[in-house]
Length: 115
Length: 115
Image 1 (cartoon, each protein chain N blue to C red):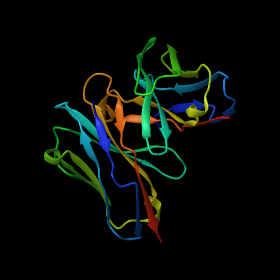
Image 2: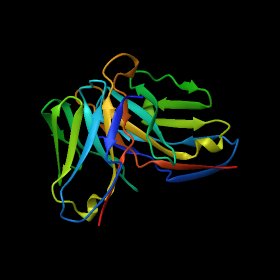
Image 3: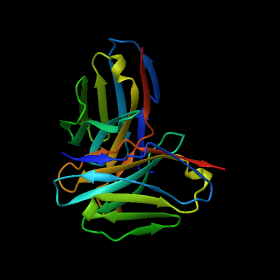
Image 4: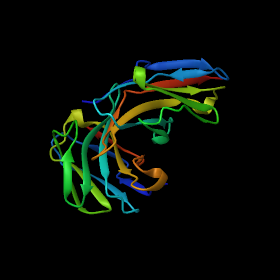
């Protein structure tokens, strides 16, 4: 157990509303990632962070922003949700030492539905 | 750019049969990591294996084995004597070995074990 939680676990919202998903880790990992999972696409990277206030874009970053003001929390924000952002969102952390080096451990996921 | 191809979208086998899941990758990096993850019907992502590109030895873990062949850019996964609990979606993934080590996933193979 890598100590990763995501909140909320399920959310239904309407087009045009802002949505923030939270990823929380308890083990002081430096690297954190947000992916989305869609049928036929596998998982695709949205944004990642390599430290507090250090973030960068992934493959599918349009329409998303992130923030990391402290090591344990990585927030993903949809400024104005669209139906194309209906997906399952996974947060991940990367192990940085020992046998877990470079292994990515995933949170339980958040199922977001945009109506 | 990195790419992972899992050509088998769905596979069904009868329990106790052996099954191989194919994974072919593309990368310009000389050093990289390959991964397999399992996603059971409950939805979480379970880490199975990480393989460094320098280590071409095949690996066996119980009923699971992995065949890494750099010459064909393949990292195939075999389940021996399959069981119903093996039913899941399996993802192959690739990451660079240095830097931010973002994961590039294949589209997944849905494996169904028929009792």
